[in-house]
Length: 402
Ligand code: PLP
Image 1: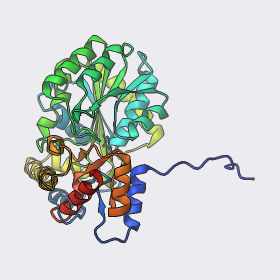
Image 2: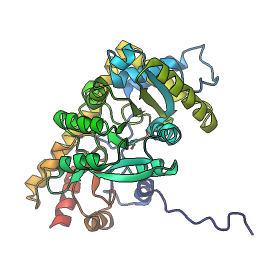
Image 3: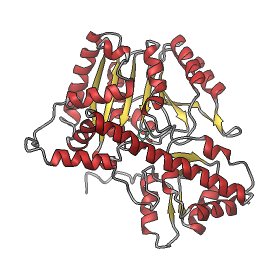
Image 4: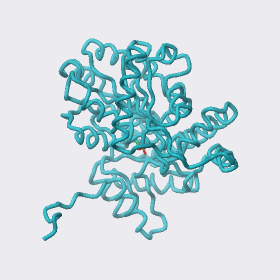
């Protein structure tokens, strides 16, 4: 008898299973608006031109070897990542009360940050995630022992933020709770708090001593402007919060498979930062020993070179611009078809996703009748929409909502 006899079958991951089904589908008009990966208008994966340049630089570097990286990553990488999110003039950087740890992309940053808090954060074992949120937040925080609860976020009636509900949750939550906040381009709703709303959120979080755990997987993807997309995080730092920010370079560098990420830590003092970093190194050692080198080398090559950095911002504008165009194209087509309902939210929302409001039963018909693949909650990855398939997509949506 196997020692694994009693291991039950786990369900497949919803998103990656959707991609598998899409790949197996032989229908020529099939559409994949499930997974959040950028596609060109020809629906091909996109290698950023600036990434190709950085690769050329790396491949031509005769001194490059394959030695281990330091446990927390090269400082030239983590420092550049911290600067990117906090801004060069951040008080945390000026006062040296920050640390950076290279992680296995954004997922690893979430995990390592959560693991650290499970060991060293003594105020609360409660962690609040938005309803809805990236499916992995619950997995990650419950894995390390947090009691995970949801805070209201999406208001289906206004198809916008449930600001009142969110603040109420924060006021009622036990003092010192951890709040996982999407820094920009909220996944899956595409709805972000306004700057005034962020100010209100910060105020209540300070009153209640909650800990802000920012997840920033889309810097540069929401507005196309790296600084604008970092506004909320920078505001919290200016307001004197200690916080974590998970950074992913999967989307904004198109380095999905290379797993380049960073966890930025802001503390009260330089000594705090050093102590925290030392514990992160200890944790990282037992989990992965050393972070992978290839993706992070590309990222730091670009971030530490003004010319390449400028080119990167142009590549980002192309990606965010194409998504904005597709939002407009989809909304226009639905309006032209007189599809029942209002569709302004498609262009009001930002980032990679649109939370359409389609019901589970409608999503099912889209898949079975039209070979259009999206998550059950009606989320569309706008990156899977192109000038070639937008009419078909809109006609299919029109059919299912009538
Ligand atoms: N956080 C959010 C909200 C995301 O949407 C994603 C990716 O979809 C991630 C984190 C992390 O992705 P990765 O581990 O590929 O960087």
